[in-house]
Amino acid sequence: MSQQAAKIVTEEWKKVLGVSDTDLGGDFFALGGNSLMAVTLVMRIEDRLEVALPIETLFVDGTLEGLIAACTSTDALDEISPVQRA
Image (cartoon, rainbow, N blue to C red; front, side, top):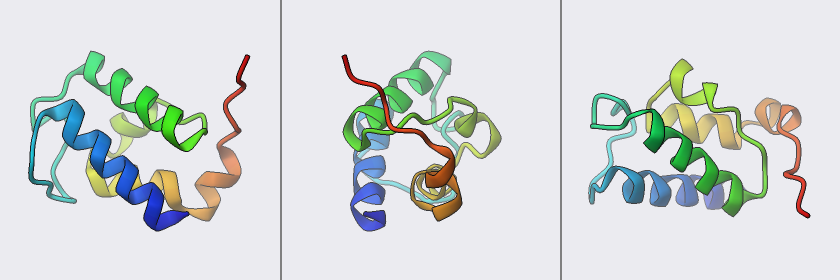
């Protein structure tokens, strides 16, 4: 799942920021992201990975690498609960 999750996170990062290239160390907000875009990105990732990802994740470590780590680390996955679907 971690490689697939990294691919999904990267795809959504590119879509939301409107970029074609990615830098794992690039900061979301320095690349033009804002709070509305952050919410959009997190919602897209949650929907595709079927997890609940805290929005604070982007504010703590706003890099692509940090976001991927939050979505793929064993500890993070233990803390993330499945999204409740109606």
